[in-house]
Image (cartoon, rainbow, N blue to C red; front, top):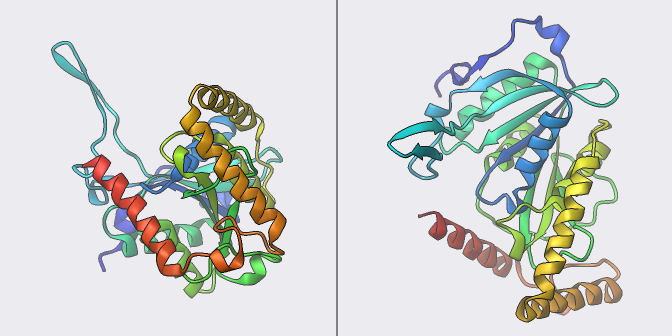
Length: 304
């Protein structure tokens, strides 16, 4: 493996001891981030709290530009701007004055293991003892019910009283998933939150998922994180969805069916599941994996 420290550059002249933080939040965008949960959270935190960039990654080594082309602006007869991607480590101060780190930007296409080692080195440099990841996953659930969460961690003691939705299932890998695995293998504390986003809203901004995820991060880390702006955005989203559904009978029927399914789960099962109406109807791990992979193939085809 090439030297992981050559993947990033420190962007601060401050003494590192003054920038120590015990928690790192990982909200890196990826093509399965349903509801744009990660982007909403990272934008909300860096826009609403005091923050500074302390390290930047060399994205030219990590991204496949042809796979997801950055936007450029063409004005009449010339190019005027380029939306250059950036994978950045932010040093953020919460509402109580407690510092934490936020790793945000596009998921690397290449060199995952090397980036993992780079992140591990940065965590050691800044004194991180807890890593928290958050992202959205598409699920057959209605937006009119509470947002569900799949909790996962490097050690079950970190998520007491957890009630898993899934049993054993194979899904396409993600950088955040690999980071959680490798940090756990090294004995580090990692907690992950996968927010259940209605599949019909997977490609739109779904602020309710981001709000639920932010509250989960706050509860797990003890950080005091602002929620007012996201709560207001979530309210606007709900009003827009209600207006759209009221004018589309077919969509209304789909949502109503999902509501009935959801409510039957909650009423009928001692341990509610959002996947079937009764324990006997729960899909197998292979069926869940096949459905998830089909969703991902659909998104890949759209991007091609």
